[in-house]
Image 1 (tube, rainbow, N blue to C red):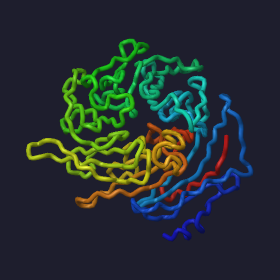
Image 2: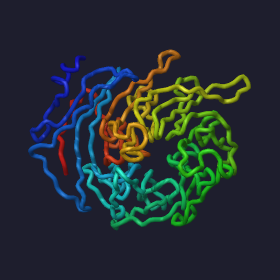
Image 3: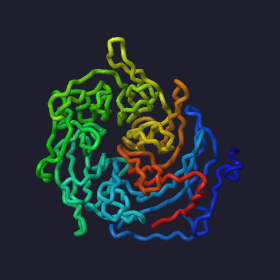
Image 4: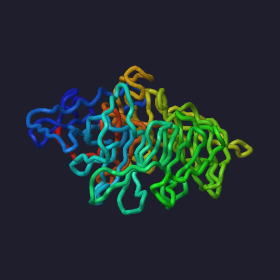
Length: 451
């Protein structure tokens, strides 16, 4: 379809919001060949007449800027509605859970949680002010779980690599700030994980190196207010255990039905009793320093492959598993894209519901400030790479979901509004965002507004 026909002229805004002003945006149907220049960024809806603003109880301005954003690729379009819950730098990790037990999914980012559906902010602790150009938050990753089994979802928080990890207890109906308990004194690696390491039906566990010494996984102690029990996986100084190590994953690499722990130098093979120590390390090459390492059979040959992305450079890859005549595991590197820098977090999810997993990732804006890394000031893209299998060939088609947010160091893909479509939730130096996927043809148009 012609771009001008769809949009009514290049760069135009379409649709009217409830305030009578134009506030939504659609891109034309177009195919984006992966290594060609993408179309111009979708323009932001203006904040004009009729927009209101008010201060929330926590004394901050929460901006809910809503726009329908679509950068389609070949096949069925992916369309998202962008909502900015907060324009302040709160955290680079985010969790989604029903915090107040009202049946709706809320968002947790740093010292705040945002109550659905209006995304009203509530304090977990007194919010700290962070400078996105010069500093970092105290939250590299945030996860949600009922740690103390009282029926209320708590926050698990991992700070700067080498710093402490903690959990904060949801006070429930009593309200007020959440009480903090330490998980461990020093959590390392730049991609701390919360994954179902122990198998299906078992609760997820934290996975990251302990004290810059050894790979480990963690579970609450009998008394959850005490430090978590650390189960040591590696010998001292094993691969992936340094303070700022890049690259960590959980998945069944060798097909024995047990989840292994991956690093760029190989994987720790899970024993039948996961609390045994140490785990045998299998050395294989899985590329350069990266972020999340996700195990998935990309090409459908029944051998688990590995998908990774560059944390501070350029590159998204999948590593095809092959077996030598002796049965040894080997990997062949394939490039997916090298046009987006600092893809410091990655998730696989079936975004288009075609039965194959797609890559969701994006730029970590100002990972080392405005003058660090490669292209630090380039557009903060959030992207979906849709996997297509054509016979023995693998193809990836990119959809640009947004060009002014990106990812942090950890984010979520979840059906946040329970409509059967997967959504994306991020928190980073640009703010806190929800991208709700919309059904093609639903013609959703909402006005930009500031609460």
